[in-house]
Amino acid sequence: MTNAKTPRPNRPKSGPNAKGRPSKSAGNRPVKGKPSSTKDEQPTYQRVEAAPVSDKKERIAKVIARAGLCSRRDAERWIAEGRVILDGKVLESPAIVVGPENSILVDGEPLPQAERARLWKYHKPKGQITAARDPEGRPTVFDKLPKDLPRLQPVGRLDYNSEGLLLFTNDGEVKRKMELPATGWTRRYRVRVHGTVEEHHIKALAEGMTIDGIHYAPIEAIISNQARTNAWMTMSLKEGKNREIRRVCEHLGLIVNRLIRISYGPFQLGEIPEGEIVELPYKLVRDQLGLPKEAPVEASVKTGKDGKPLKSGKPGPGRKKIAGKGKPETRKPAKPMPLNKRS
Image (cartoon, rainbow, N blue to C red; front, side):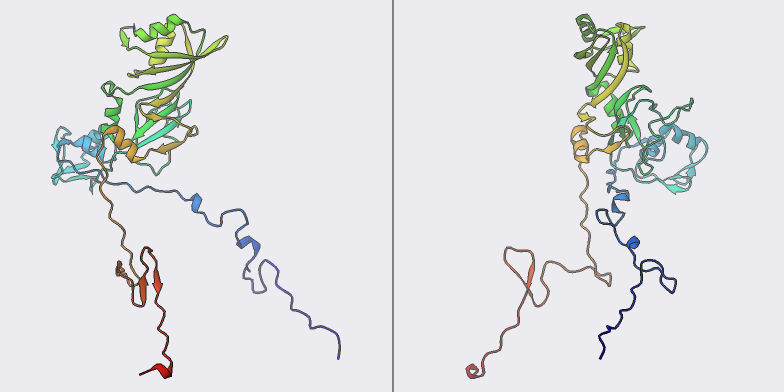
């Protein structure tokens, strides 16, 4: 008898085995502390309800734009190019109104049903123009937006050197409603000017002024910080004409060297990073704009392996439901009676 132990077979090391097939190595297993799936890397999509169908008749270019295919101007150009068919005939003029009973084809495809109104807030950085394209080739606010977004329209504008809150919507009517001075929504800005702000500056802004024949409504201004050469102010206005704050400040001898919009009506810039876009909850948008409520969404139906819907509401055989609880309990089989007690 010998004390020699039976040698253990050598375990294969990580890497290709003798047959050339890769073995289960550390490189194939998830690393501790890191997610094993790419779930966080996948884009998330929000289910969007279609807009309620309206009986109101509208100009066809507006209807095409509302469906998210293009702008009204582009829709008019498409009609002139013969790309739009109305009720089986090629449309030649955009001067026509249509309703839900009309059939509209664009490039041979039916017009998609418009989505319900949606609203996004975007933290615009300095150095972008608020336009879809720029003849001078400057960067636009659309250049870095995610590609899976619908066709968006900016609500109001921020000039090339301004930054801060810029709202986007997919609905032209919402855009128009939010931009009207009659809506009465206040635009609030943080403004840094070169120079010393005096009380007469604040008073002149509060009274309004006319510059080169253009009248600017009163602007509420509050001095936040006054340094030796610069001052920060919070300025609030309700019109938002082109370069309004820069022009009125320049008229008063104050040169604006930074302008940040921090709110537009009830919508705040918040803490979103520069260059990021965030969709606002529909309930908030609906309440602030007086939009209709969403249509109820049907509950999904669970199906079995055969594709047939599963029945619900009653526990299956051999299972009973405990009062006050949602989970069924398996019924235990009855114990056999002793022989001496059987009748």
